[in-house]
Length: 74
Image 1 (cartoon, rainbow, N blue to C red):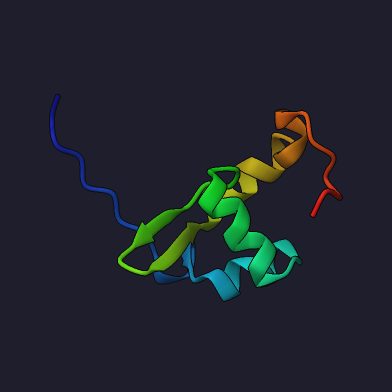
Image 2: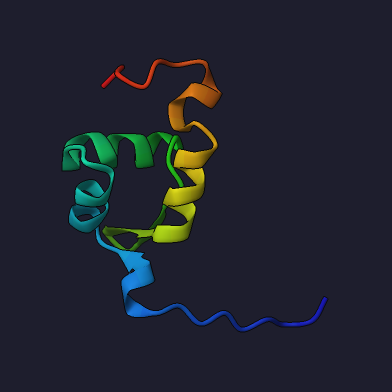
């Protein structure tokens, strides 16, 4: 397997506050879903980061609906 370099623009990677605003939800709900693995995210030290493309794909695929949960659970 060859190494691959992926370059992301600064606006492609979001903080928890930015991702919560993008998804129009609370920061608490966003972080709870990230900790449970219900939302695509990466933890860098003590901070969570979210890729816009991953969140968009998650929404297109139905988000929580794919896991047998209602979207209004939280």
